[in-house]
Length: 345
Image 1 (cartoon, rainbow, N blue to C red):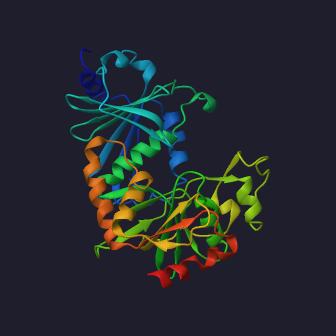
Image 2 (cartoon, rainbow, N blue to C red):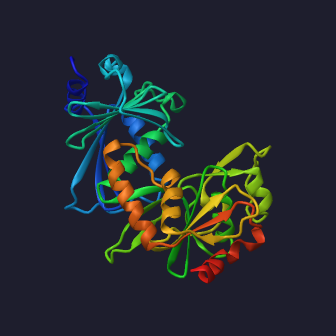
Image 3 (cartoon, rainbow, N blue to C red):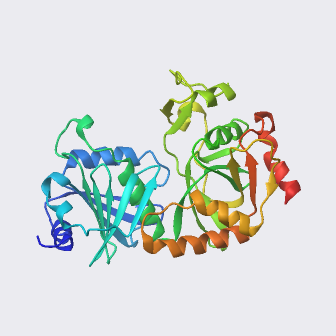
């Protein structure tokens, strides 16, 4: 292999693979892997999310994703260009470098795995570690793979994974966004305990519905609960809670509360949570909204999607009211936030 394009073309055309077809909202995705055991492990991981639908539309276009091990292709590092076109630190994937190659883009993750996205939108994942083993502890962590895969496939239907918690009430969805530690999980759970529906505590899917209005789809994943959240919400109890405020416990939402996954729902408001103290909730103008949301709200990896992300965000801030609220707002006021929003609107 003389180029990284030749390497990935060879991998993509390798036929001896196990496969599984899933439906991700309105798209079909065919996963092909060199290990049946790891493919089943991957299926068990993503099956817990609410994006996987039960029925696969028969006429839907099918996307293909190849998953293999770096141990089968040890020369790939020597084939990368000398300089990346972009570097990023993603909370779910880690430190990444993006390289431009003649037939597409390569994402290199600091833990040693790599993603090739061809000009024809074909995806190849090379994971660091053996996939053929039947010992789960030796498998690579699939979290980053799922994050990139879902983000890429959803973008092909003009949908975005956004960094926000979502709650629903009276047929509308409201989002809380902010940096890690700003209180998204605590606030969303506080509302759910008061009868609101749950869309997610850290990420949800955002896209336009048939009416042209922005809508939210739930994205359920394991919640990471801190001791601070447990202390603020005594009705939310978990077995073996974190021993200190810096530790977290991973739990499923239905292990905490009895709730059902809601349907896609029109987006009514966005609340940006800050760590500043003493500021009353207020509505932001379009310029402030765009500046703050552009920092952490949209979730994407490839440089060529930046323009589409910014255009979508600009449309969002002109259609949807955006507010800012401090993290220190007392929990007793949480259930009144949306009535505050109505007065400010």
